[in-house]
Amino acid sequence: GFPSLFRADGRKVQVDSWGARQVSTTSGALGNTMAAFLSDQMNGTASNELFLLLGTNNYGIGGQSKATFKTYYQNMLDGIIAIRPDIIIYCVSMFNRATYDTGNASGAFGDDFADAIEELCLTRPTTRFIYGKNALSLANTVDGAQLHPNQTGMQQIHDSLLVYYNALQ
Figure 1 (tube, rainbow, N blue to C red):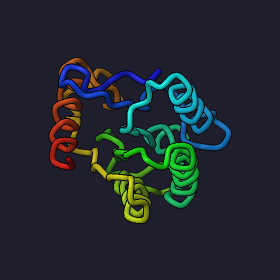
Figure 2 (figure 1 turned 90 degrees about the vertical axis):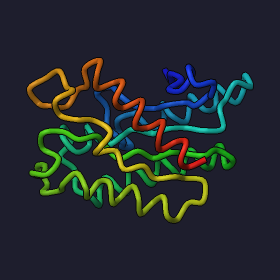
Figure 3 (figure 1 turned 45 degrees about the vertical axis):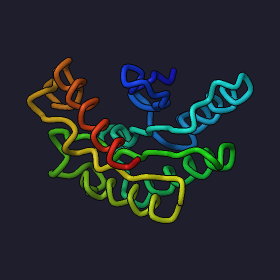
Figure 4 (figure 1 turned 120 degrees about the vertical axis):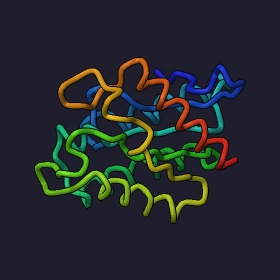
């Protein structure tokens, strides 16, 4: 589903994130995102804002290069925009993780993925880039991979993204 990230703050903002999937044409991520928008559009409940917090699994599990990830992310963005040209999309790069600065299997670093997302946002007027690395401290994770946020980490993410969101208004 698409939880309301800022429901407590009186806003209706859809979020696509979490889960063990990757942004690609084979993972179903694009289809799931587009299907959710179509469904919301049909019943009139769609928000005009969306936060995308995607790329972590492309980086870690998929070990993708910057170029491959950028192509998949571009296809997803363009698919969403084709369905909802009026939507504002906040594209959040992946949060900090233990391997962010040491690279993945293809030799890409966390900031390579952030750069890919930012480059795409610069050419699409309804997108906004948010640098996500600093939204989560490694100390606020629950696992040895220093990847999955604990309760404090979830609050840290919420608070960090809310600051960015308010600044972009």
